[in-house]
Image (cartoon, rainbow, N blue to C red; front, side, top):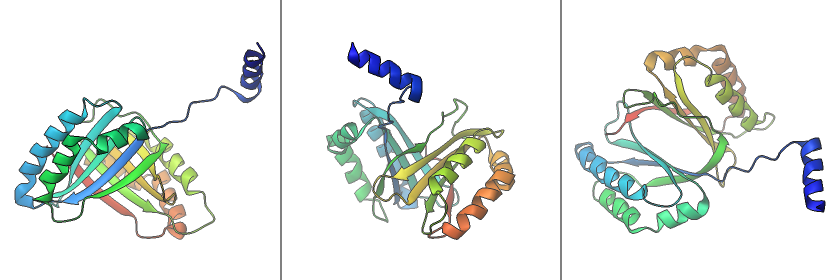
Length: 222
Protein backbone atom coordinates (compact mmCIF):
# COMPACT_ATOMS: atom_id res chain seq x y z
CA UNK A 1 0.00 0.00 0.00
CA UNK A 2 2.80 2.39 0.92
CA UNK A 3 4.59 1.78 -2.40
CA UNK A 4 1.40 2.50 -4.34
CA UNK A 5 0.84 5.71 -2.34
CA UNK A 6 4.45 6.80 -2.96
CA UNK A 7 4.07 6.12 -6.68
CA UNK A 8 0.87 8.20 -6.87
CA UNK A 9 2.47 11.11 -5.01
CA UNK A 10 5.58 10.97 -7.21
CA UNK A 11 3.47 10.94 -10.36
CA UNK A 12 1.35 13.84 -9.10
CA UNK A 13 4.30 16.11 -8.39
CA UNK A 14 6.95 14.97 -10.84
CA UNK A 15 4.98 13.37 -13.66
CA UNK A 16 5.13 9.83 -14.94
CA UNK A 17 8.65 8.58 -15.47
CA UNK A 18 9.42 7.62 -19.05
CA UNK A 19 11.47 4.42 -19.24
CA UNK A 20 15.01 5.00 -20.50
CA UNK A 21 15.60 4.03 -24.11
CA UNK A 22 18.01 1.09 -24.00
CA UNK A 23 18.48 0.93 -27.79
CA UNK A 24 22.00 0.27 -29.03
CA UNK A 25 23.26 1.51 -32.38
CA UNK A 26 26.36 0.64 -34.37
CA UNK A 27 27.52 2.88 -37.21
CA UNK A 28 29.97 1.18 -39.55
CA UNK A 29 32.14 2.61 -42.32
CA UNK A 30 34.01 0.34 -44.72
CA UNK A 31 35.40 0.72 -48.24
CA UNK A 32 35.31 -2.24 -50.61
CA UNK A 33 36.72 -2.63 -54.10
CA UNK A 34 34.17 -0.93 -56.42
CA UNK A 35 34.12 -3.99 -58.68
CA UNK A 36 33.17 -6.12 -55.68
CA UNK A 37 30.20 -4.06 -54.51
CA UNK A 38 27.72 -6.66 -55.79
CA UNK A 39 29.45 -9.30 -53.67
CA UNK A 40 29.22 -7.02 -50.64
CA UNK A 41 25.50 -6.45 -51.23
CA UNK A 42 24.85 -10.20 -51.54
CA UNK A 43 26.78 -10.91 -48.34
CA UNK A 44 24.93 -8.11 -46.54
CA UNK A 45 21.50 -9.46 -47.51
CA UNK A 46 22.43 -12.87 -46.12
CA UNK A 47 23.72 -11.21 -42.95
CA UNK A 48 20.55 -9.11 -42.58
CA UNK A 49 18.22 -12.06 -43.16
CA UNK A 50 19.99 -14.11 -40.50
CA UNK A 51 20.11 -11.16 -38.07
CA UNK A 52 16.34 -10.60 -38.33
CA UNK A 53 15.81 -13.93 -36.57
CA UNK A 54 17.78 -12.81 -33.51
CA UNK A 55 16.17 -11.58 -30.31
CA UNK A 56 16.38 -7.81 -29.97
CA UNK A 57 16.81 -7.09 -33.68
CA UNK A 58 15.72 -3.62 -34.70
CA UNK A 59 16.87 -2.88 -38.23
CA UNK A 60 19.91 -2.95 -40.52
CA UNK A 61 20.48 -0.24 -43.12
CA UNK A 62 23.11 -0.50 -45.85
CA UNK A 63 24.24 2.55 -47.84
CA UNK A 64 26.73 3.56 -50.52
CA UNK A 65 28.11 7.08 -50.64
CA UNK A 66 26.92 9.01 -53.68
CA UNK A 67 29.79 9.58 -56.11
CA UNK A 68 32.10 7.18 -54.24
CA UNK A 69 31.47 3.61 -55.46
CA UNK A 70 32.35 1.01 -52.86
CA UNK A 71 32.36 3.44 -49.91
CA UNK A 72 29.76 1.84 -47.67
CA UNK A 73 28.00 2.68 -44.41
CA UNK A 74 25.88 0.45 -42.19
CA UNK A 75 23.56 1.44 -39.35
CA UNK A 76 22.51 -1.32 -36.97
CA UNK A 77 19.76 -0.97 -34.35
CA UNK A 78 19.33 -3.38 -31.44
CA UNK A 79 16.98 -3.27 -28.47
CA UNK A 80 19.71 -3.40 -25.81
CA UNK A 81 23.38 -4.13 -25.17
CA UNK A 82 22.77 -7.79 -24.34
CA UNK A 83 21.12 -8.38 -27.73
CA UNK A 84 23.92 -6.57 -29.52
CA UNK A 85 26.63 -8.54 -27.72
CA UNK A 86 24.92 -11.84 -28.59
CA UNK A 87 24.67 -10.71 -32.20
CA UNK A 88 28.35 -9.78 -32.31
CA UNK A 89 29.25 -13.33 -31.25
CA UNK A 90 26.87 -15.04 -33.70
CA UNK A 91 28.26 -17.28 -36.44
CA UNK A 92 26.56 -15.35 -39.25
CA UNK A 93 28.11 -12.09 -37.99
CA UNK A 94 31.55 -13.65 -38.21
CA UNK A 95 30.73 -14.97 -41.69
CA UNK A 96 29.71 -11.48 -42.81
CA UNK A 97 32.96 -9.99 -41.55
CA UNK A 98 34.93 -12.77 -43.20
CA UNK A 99 33.17 -12.16 -46.54
CA UNK A 100 34.19 -8.50 -46.39
CA UNK A 101 37.80 -9.22 -45.46
CA UNK A 102 38.55 -10.48 -48.97
CA UNK A 103 37.20 -7.37 -50.72
CA UNK A 104 37.61 -4.45 -48.31
CA UNK A 105 40.06 -1.60 -48.87
CA UNK A 106 39.79 -0.10 -45.38
CA UNK A 107 39.31 -1.23 -41.80
CA UNK A 108 35.85 -2.24 -40.64
CA UNK A 109 35.26 0.95 -38.65
CA UNK A 110 32.42 0.19 -36.21
CA UNK A 111 31.39 2.82 -33.67
CA UNK A 112 28.96 2.28 -30.73
CA UNK A 113 26.14 4.78 -30.18
CA UNK A 114 23.17 5.43 -27.93
CA UNK A 115 20.04 7.43 -28.83
CA UNK A 116 19.94 11.17 -28.20
CA UNK A 117 16.99 12.34 -30.30
CA UNK A 118 14.96 9.74 -32.18
CA UNK A 119 11.97 10.30 -34.42
CA UNK A 120 9.87 7.93 -36.49
CA UNK A 121 11.00 6.65 -39.88
CA UNK A 122 8.35 7.53 -42.43
CA UNK A 123 6.99 4.57 -44.43
CA UNK A 124 7.59 6.75 -47.51
CA UNK A 125 11.35 6.20 -47.24
CA UNK A 126 12.61 3.99 -50.07
CA UNK A 127 15.62 3.35 -52.29
CA UNK A 128 14.96 6.61 -54.17
CA UNK A 129 15.15 8.75 -51.05
CA UNK A 130 18.17 10.89 -50.22
CA UNK A 131 20.14 9.77 -47.15
CA UNK A 132 22.60 11.88 -45.17
CA UNK A 133 24.97 10.67 -42.46
CA UNK A 134 26.90 13.36 -40.61
CA UNK A 135 29.60 13.01 -37.98
CA UNK A 136 29.70 15.89 -35.51
CA UNK A 137 32.78 16.33 -33.33
CA UNK A 138 32.51 18.81 -30.45
CA UNK A 139 35.79 20.25 -29.21
CA UNK A 140 34.89 23.52 -27.51
CA UNK A 141 32.92 24.62 -24.46
CA UNK A 142 30.20 27.15 -23.78
CA UNK A 143 27.25 25.63 -25.66
CA UNK A 144 25.28 22.51 -24.84
CA UNK A 145 25.80 20.52 -28.03
CA UNK A 146 23.18 17.93 -27.10
CA UNK A 147 20.48 20.60 -26.77
CA UNK A 148 21.65 22.21 -30.01
CA UNK A 149 21.30 18.92 -31.88
CA UNK A 150 17.95 18.08 -30.27
CA UNK A 151 16.51 21.43 -31.41
CA UNK A 152 17.83 20.86 -34.91
CA UNK A 153 16.19 17.42 -35.05
CA UNK A 154 12.85 18.60 -33.67
CA UNK A 155 12.60 21.51 -36.11
CA UNK A 156 13.89 19.58 -39.12
CA UNK A 157 11.31 16.82 -38.69
CA UNK A 158 8.60 19.41 -39.36
CA UNK A 159 10.03 20.32 -42.77
CA UNK A 160 8.35 19.24 -45.99
CA UNK A 161 10.04 16.15 -47.37
CA UNK A 162 11.72 14.99 -44.17
CA UNK A 163 11.32 11.25 -43.60
CA UNK A 164 13.75 10.72 -40.72
CA UNK A 165 15.97 12.87 -38.52
CA UNK A 166 17.79 11.06 -35.70
CA UNK A 167 20.73 12.09 -33.53
CA UNK A 168 22.97 9.44 -31.96
CA UNK A 169 25.62 10.04 -29.30
CA UNK A 170 28.80 8.01 -29.07
CA UNK A 171 28.51 5.51 -26.22
CA UNK A 172 32.00 6.21 -24.86
CA UNK A 173 32.97 9.63 -26.23
CA UNK A 174 30.12 11.98 -25.38
CA UNK A 175 31.48 14.77 -27.59
CA UNK A 176 30.91 12.75 -30.78
CA UNK A 177 27.54 12.50 -32.51
CA UNK A 178 26.11 10.99 -35.69
CA UNK A 179 23.12 12.59 -37.38
CA UNK A 180 21.02 10.35 -39.65
CA UNK A 181 18.69 12.08 -42.11
CA UNK A 182 16.32 10.80 -44.79
CA UNK A 183 14.75 13.20 -47.27
CA UNK A 184 12.17 12.56 -49.93
CA UNK A 185 14.51 13.87 -52.62
CA UNK A 186 17.45 16.18 -53.24
CA UNK A 187 15.15 19.19 -53.54
CA UNK A 188 13.90 18.68 -49.98
CA UNK A 189 17.50 18.36 -48.72
CA UNK A 190 18.51 21.53 -50.55
CA UNK A 191 15.62 23.43 -48.94
CA UNK A 192 16.70 22.13 -45.52
CA UNK A 193 20.28 23.28 -46.09
CA UNK A 194 19.22 26.92 -46.56
CA UNK A 195 16.50 26.95 -43.88
CA UNK A 196 16.92 29.56 -41.14
CA UNK A 197 17.14 27.00 -38.33
CA UNK A 198 19.81 25.01 -40.19
CA UNK A 199 21.95 28.11 -40.70
CA UNK A 200 21.50 29.11 -37.04
CA UNK A 201 22.59 25.62 -35.98
CA UNK A 202 25.73 25.77 -38.12
CA UNK A 203 26.65 29.22 -36.81
CA UNK A 204 26.29 27.99 -33.22
CA UNK A 205 28.23 24.82 -33.98
CA UNK A 206 31.22 26.51 -35.60
CA UNK A 207 32.93 27.88 -32.47
CA UNK A 208 32.64 24.58 -30.57
CA UNK A 209 33.35 22.14 -33.39
CA UNK A 210 36.42 19.96 -32.94
CA UNK A 211 36.79 19.24 -36.67
CA UNK A 212 35.12 20.16 -39.96
CA UNK A 213 31.54 18.89 -40.23
CA UNK A 214 31.71 15.49 -41.94
CA UNK A 215 28.47 15.35 -43.95
CA UNK A 216 28.06 12.66 -46.61
CA UNK A 217 25.17 11.88 -48.94
CA UNK A 218 24.24 8.22 -49.46
CA UNK A 219 21.89 6.00 -51.38
CA UNK A 220 20.58 2.55 -50.49
CA UNK A 221 23.23 0.00 -51.52
CA UNK A 222 20.95 -2.65 -52.99
